Amino acid sequence: MNKIKKTNYSYIGIAFIILVFGIIFIPRIIDRISNNDISRQESRSDLKDENKVVDLEALVFIENNGVKRKVPPFSFTNQEGKTITNQDYLGKVYVVEFFFTTCPTICPKMNANLIQIQNAFKDFENFGVASFTINPDYDTPEILKNYAEHYGVTNPNWHLLTGKQEAIYKLANEGFYIYTAENENVDGGFEHSGNFALIDKNGFIRSRKDDFGNPIIYYRGIVSEAEKVDDDGVKEEISALKEDIKKLLSE
Image (cartoon, rainbow, N blue to C red; front, side):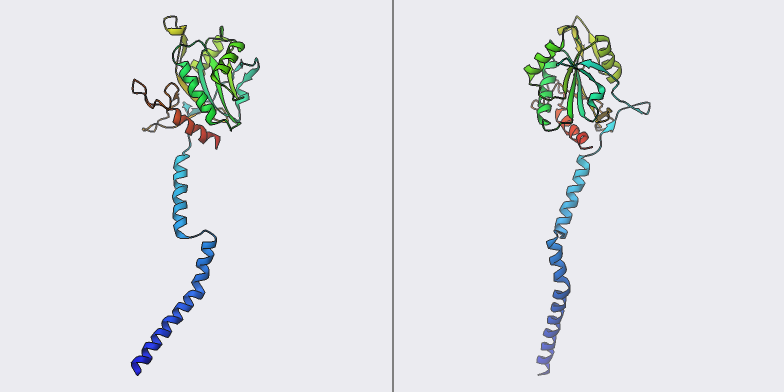
């Protein structure tokens, strides 16, 4: 008889503990669930935020003797006959290239890649491109306009620019350190780098770092995303450029 009573007391004690637990803790659990504040969701959210921080790692500034390199002042004429200066690009993220319309080698590849980039950012009013011709004697605004229409330039912030050759070459070689020169011994009569420069909203040249922590400074503009790697084993950097444009647009 005593054994039965003890057993009943044990059940009563356990029931009392369960009742207290329900009164105190169940409302708290329900409240956390209703506010989407459960531990499993917190851990997933934290992981997502950590990945976001890594993906949006800030791009570095390009420096000379500790001074951040900025786009030098310029003033040229675009394909519509309008004067465009560096001030017109302030507040915009843009890509810079040097090319010429009769280029038989790398320019068609470069501009096909830029068209792809243009289309990827067609919904961004603060994205643009600056294309400077290195053969301004031939590349008049009319020629540049036909070239733009042929390639499918639709971004109103993509200016194909012409002007005095000396000023353009100085901008390329001294302002951006992007090689440009006349050379009658090469196809087309001109030679130039196939690299793109990336400029932020404040006019500073920006880039990501390489595997050794050094700025890459420029992005290869010749190899397409579809190619992945060219015949010389050079990897494409258009996908990296797209990613970094997104980063600057979000700054």
